[in-house]
Image (cartoon, rainbow, N blue to C red; front, side, top):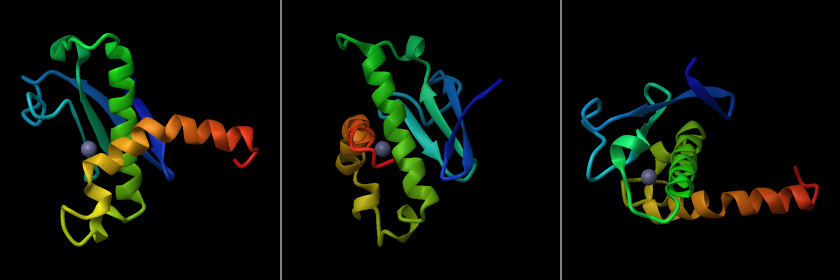
Length: 114
Ligand SMILES: [Zn+2]
């Protein structure tokens, strides 16, 4: 059964593929979010390799990053951004949320703000 994640009430499939199976994946992209088909595609870690100390941490962050893209698509911000340089498509901002998201969530939980 395919893994899914619920984004603002909408299910997204999480798929793992090799670069040979998906031409978008490869040297420039380890993952992407296709809102038109409600799916997040990640490169199969066995196919991608990698030389960071803990690749599991890298892949979890990559998945969080693509989930942030899905949230921006589902809430309509990505399509109302006045161009690719606008903030909802800025990779630094999306990565920031992917990195800081767990800490923000923990702070919300600690503060009983959820
Ligand atoms: Zn991105």
